[in-house]
Image (cartoon, rainbow, N blue to C red):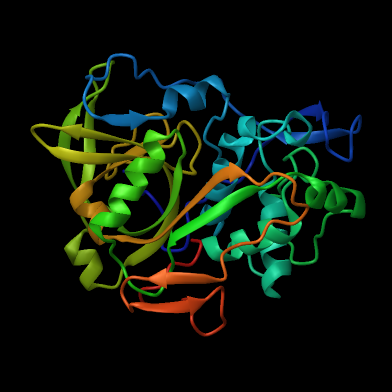
Length: 342
């Protein structure tokens, strides 16, 4: 049986593929570079029941955004990259880039913005790096199989990233070392999905969770949604944090609501415990309300501003206190209950 994730991360990494030529607004136009290997695999959702909900997978497939395999510790980076990739069509034509965003650049930018040298980040660290340095295409600054703290993008790539139009960032549940969200958070996730905007989520997980059947897809495959954590593994402290993109939800009369999570394990990722389909797995709302630690959305383009500004305060429901944006000692650090980008 294949395990979903190690305690540290879902391993994989990008596989070198055919050389591509950078095009569009990127600084390295015309220079052959190595691009990640992707697969032309779609998710057929045309036969799903017409019930209340939203499913962005058909549009994701139309845009060619096949799930990529993350490098160790980089799930938050890869989830954030997808959120930016998905929103590219909403930017002005001059600001768009080839389909895949550079995970290496996002990781570098998060480290630069927080004076760190880590492989992986929190969502708020990614947001700060994106705010200051923007983003470039995967082809402009390709991912490496292993993390190199000394690696930094060339000056022309940084210039292209900073010059590119940004998306507004909404962190509406900040990491505060606790798990669980309010009905208002759940409603906001659904509202974003109804508008066609995916949401990044940091999850509390164990291997081999309890799952329940919530329906079938158009191919007749049973959809299993994660209901609760594996209590034995939880008691043994064999739990971990993991970041994904939420790309849909479905209301069912028999089983309640479940969310569609896009993992970072490639389109062929398989795990008996989580029972994924085509690189996606499913989270029952019972689990979702109790095991989410942070939520982020990249929303509408910021027009006419060279450097967008993020909110200066975040409201943390568990403390009922306004917190300074990204304040050291306030945001969660690695440790019990914290969600590091693993």
